[in-house]
Length: 201
Image (cartoon, rainbow, N blue to C red):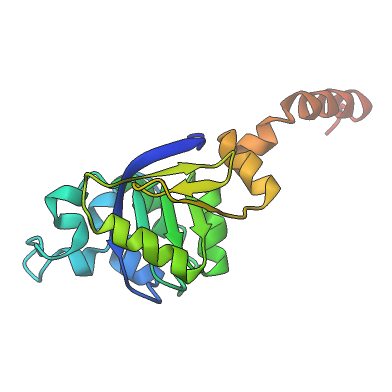
């Protein structure tokens, strides 16, 4: 998993509440178990018309937001079903950080396990960043996970809370497999000892 330390990038404004995981990645794209290739279908029903053509008014189809790495969204982001494909699709598009007032718990935890930093801020601070994001590609928001701060393009700084263990994992690029592999030497030693003690197993 890619480490997350600091990020300065274009922020796309998505001022919608209750964006559920089916809006993020519709159910027809859940057949794959690969984490790559889903970005093209991120927000599929909002990005494309019935003929597969881009809807020009949707934020991620606008030229200034095609390279967005941060998404500023509304309350209760990631609600609905628990599909891990939702953070996969965001990450494959290029989104490394989501900023919103609140999240559904499963989506929130899945983000950390896939290298995305979900930041929860009070509504009034999200409103400031939403207006900042609406300025387009010239307004870049900075995120510092170590310092736990978000800085607007105008230099306004907001602090956010994050669980210490989740922070450690994201800073070091550790998903569940990575955490296990940190114990590889202990696992090898246990297996060697077990093989000696029970050679018939």
